[in-house]
Length: 620
Image: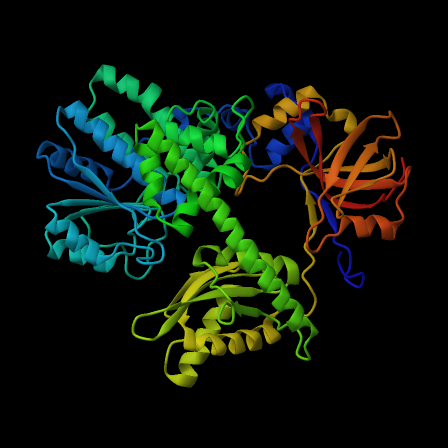
C-alpha cells in the first residue's frame, strides 16, 4: 500500500452528461452513459459515432494512396512473370512474422492469377545471432542464390547500408516498414519505400503496424492481377481472412487502436472465431481460447501473442512463419506445440531471473547505501545468464516492486575474449529515462573520449541499449548520479481518472451490449473506467489467495448489487487498505472499476474489476 505520508490521488471524471450527450443518445439509440463516453472520445457527430460502432472493411483506405506501392506492385508483377526468385526479409516479432506470412501468401496468389509459379523465399533473422534489421551479408548471399528482388517487412526504413549493398550486388530492394525514418538522413535509396510515415506520403492514417503496411502491398498486388470475379472474391473472402493474423499483429505491436487499426482489430477478432488454418487453430486451442464466445484484445495480447513472440525471444521465429503457412496439419500442430512449450520456457526463465533479482533487491535495500535512485541490474554474478528476450519484462517487474527506474542487462561473451551487455529499461512517472541514458552517454564520452553505449534508443518510459560489458559499472554510477538529481523528490501522484460516473441501476443488458460495441480496447483506446459513489458493503469482504479482495457492493437506495475483485499489486495492497480502514458490512465506499464479463457457466455474469476504493465522500 502507498506510504500514508504521500497524499491521496485526486479522483477525476472525464465524461460529461449534457444536452449534446442526451441528443446523441437519442439519435443513436444507445444509453445516455454510452453517448457521454462517445463524446468524451471525440466522436462528436452521429456519422462518426455510427462508423465507430459499426466498423467495416469499406472504411479502410485504398492501398494505392500510399507512396511507393504502385512502383512496388509493378516490380513484383515483373518478377513473377520473369519467374525471378523473390526474398521477403522479415523480423522476429509477431509483427514481422505475420507481415512475412501475409505478403508471401499474397505473392503466391497473385502468381496463380498470372498463370505462373512463384518462387517466394523468406528470411527471419535470429534475434541473438543476427539482431534487428537487414544484414548486408544476407543480401550478398541472396544475390549468390539467384534472387533479384528483396522485399523487407517491418524493417528497413533506416537500412541505408543495406540499400547500398543491394545496389552493389544487383538486387532491387523494396522497403515496407512503419517505424519512423531518420529525420536527418531521409529514407534508404531503394527501388521503392512504402511507409506512411516517410516524408511526402499523404496516406491519411499514419499509425499502422508493419504487418498492416505489408497487407496494403498484398492487397494492391492481388487486386492488380485479378479479373472481375477474382476481385470480388479477394474483397469479400481473402482480405477479410487476412485480418485474423493482422489483428494479432496490430494488438501485439501495441499500435493505437484508432482509425484503420480499430477496424482491422474489430473485424479480425470476429474472423478469429473461425480459424481455418491448422497452426492458428492449434495455437488458439493451446492458449485456451474459447471459440464459442467473443475473442477480446486481451485474449490476443496475453494468450496468443506471447506464444508467437516466444519463438523470437527463445528460439527461431521462422517456425512461426512455417506454422502459419504449412498445409500439413501434423506439422502445424507440432510447431504450435513447440511455440506453446517455448512460452512456458520463457515464463520459467523469467520467473527464475525474477527470484534472483528480488533477493538482490532485498540485499541492496538492507545495505548501508540502500537502493540507488535508479537501478542497474545485470547477470554477471548469476548462476545462469538471463535470457535477452525477457530483460524488458524483468525491468518492468523491478519498477513495479521498487517504484524506481530500472535497467536490466544480460552479458554475452564473444570469441575474441570480450563481452557485451544488452538491456532494457523502464521508468516511473516524472523521470524521463531516454534523457537519463542520453546524458550518461554524453558525460562518459566527455570524460573518457569513448562512447558509453554501442547503441541505444527509446522514449521517456522505456529504452533499449547495448554496450561493452566493461562499461556497465560506469553506466550504474552515472545513471544513479543523474537520477539523484533529476528524479522527483516526492513521487508523482497521478490522479485516478474515471471515464464516467454511473449508478448501478444504469448497468442493464442494454448498457452492457452497447459497452461491448466500444471495443476492442488497447493502446489509445482504453477500457472505460467507471465511478460509482456511496455503495455499501453488502457483506463482509473476503481475502482471495492471501492478497486480493472480493467484495459485494450494494446501492442503498434500491438494493441493486454487483460483485467485484480488487487485485492487489506491488504498490496497491487492497487487503491492507481494508484492514486499515476497518471496513465491514455496511461500510460506505466510492469505487472506481472496469466492467468484466465472467464466462463461468455456473456463476458467470458482469462484475467489477476494482481499481480504486475509498471511504465515501458523501451520503445520499
